[in-house]
Image (tube, rainbow, N blue to C red; front, side):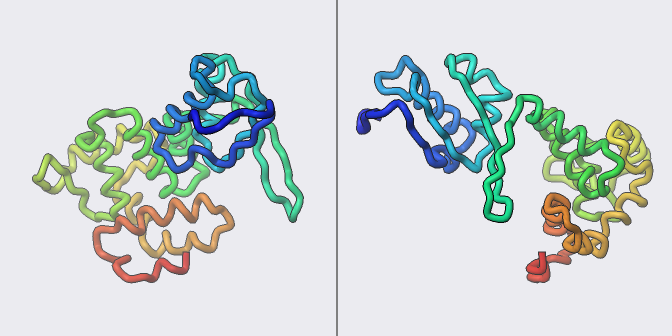
Length: 228
């Protein structure tokens, strides 16, 4: 960073880290604001504009601001009919992925496919060997729309026994999901999922695409999904 010189104490950064992965984002942000560096933005008024929530999480939910002695004020900007609306972002507005996915997976008011996707993500976030977790495999079978759930063990695959399936369905009760695999898989049919593009909720429509793309019966090998 020796190639630039700070001439004023007010600096605007236009999305400087979105192109990096999470680890590099943190490293670049640290490099920008660490006062121990020979050239640093520390001590200046910096306006960082970004579409990326990761720096907000690092600054507001993590300990980055405290660790590097930064005074951070975060706001969410949105276009409202040509006018810019500004809303303060508080620390309580941010949730880690474990808490967020658990809350969404357990909310009975949400469509089943939204809850199943979030329950699977919750297990991914809390279990180091999630691919071997049988509850995770039940959820994956639902996502794939398999009438008969399969159990994977390494490269081998076999039908999941009724006893194992019943045990894992009971275990998934913590997410308030259906207590019957058959009922759940029927509620995740291609026909039902395809109706979600008529909903006003962008999140619901986006999440519905995931199980459609992962269908094991090849339903979406065509380009019919363009309507989404």
